[in-house]
Length: 231
Image (cartoon, rainbow, N blue to C red; front, side):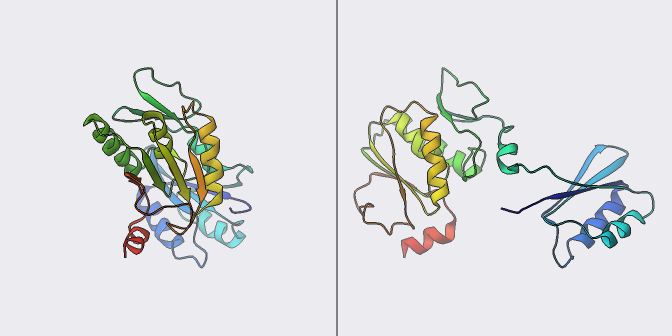
């Protein structure tokens, strides 16, 4: 996590801001993010987030551009990942309703509460939602499972969804110990009939992961690690 963040806001004509955006991408240490907005038409707004205090020469170079307004300020010391997650809208995926602590559960759905946290998995990512939809389809077809493995669990959404719909032994793993800590906290935010077993593990390399045992495996991770594990 970076120690500090600085925000430069530039308001001007679209063509000038696009040129500026391209030039900033070529800095020796490029900005953390560059975002162009059209919310104050006819002018446009370029938001530049830096992980270091912008040099005075950079600010002067931006301010000397014709017909632009430039402001710069240091952002408050916040966990911006968690701050943004607080405002995510709920996600519906089949019978599942994934929501934050600020949203009410749905009586007609299987609600999965995921408070704002650092680990991957909010339900908004299409692969997470896709896994939930496929799991919902399997359940709709009358399938049941007794041994479940959630490989690369992240925030624990899939494991928690399984725990709310199955009478199964569920093992959820992740290579990141912080992800497991967050997933355990997310479990506490949900009323599970049977707790999930959580494990820090690198792929399938752990004695508690039993090859051939599981009749349902979630593996919502990148393609390259999946291919490597399959070889």
